[in-house]
Image 1: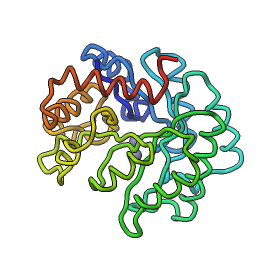
Image 2: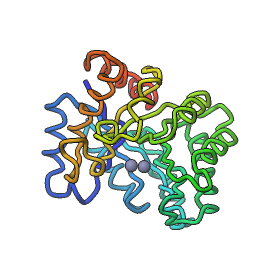
Image 3: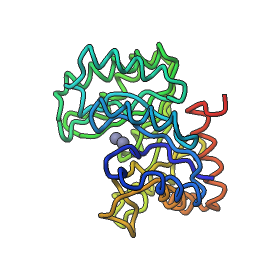
Image 4: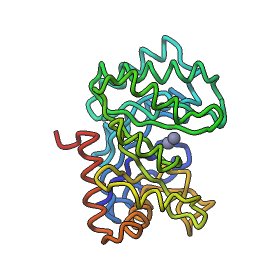
Length: 262
Ligand SMILES: [Zn+2]
Ligand SMILES: [Zn+2]
């Protein structure tokens, strides 16, 4: 019933019990998940591709996280092209801009992000976008690059949303979907629930970003795809809808974005 649209189940944190984690998720109604290959080193994408090939519950996204942008070499570009061509790879990403940590320079981040949007166009795949940082405004820049490079031909989702309501509306106007993580359940959500309430459900996804961002009640612990239902229940509560309905709509949104039924 739920779909975890963004998790890192190939991270070392799951090395000991990955199958049990996937089984637990499935028993709780999380039958499908998108394993994001980037964010833990570019070579790490290979693990997501392999897991997706071996486990029918898993699809993969392949890309270069802004933290890793400075790592990208021609040899890794060739590997990315190879990985992206695999049948159970359903998206490019996560990619984007992160001006909070600046593990790669802003310039390199911008060019590697634009390069991946071009790759997504060539491969005819949707994009998973990551954005963080205020000065200068990574949110504005991510949208500028998205508009310039997508040419209206790309679909994508802004994952783990933490921006303003005004920016969320601009992102929706630019054709993006928005995904909420466990932050939506935090006691101090910094206004995120109000933002989620004001957005149309038919443009929203839910995710865990596991092993990070465990929901309220599990904070400080390892997060896992099982908990995506708690994010969905928080979203259902702000919209005043039954959780089942929100599960149906958000799972449908994700299945359409990642074209899981075609
Ligand atoms: Zn991210
Ligand atoms: Zn992530």
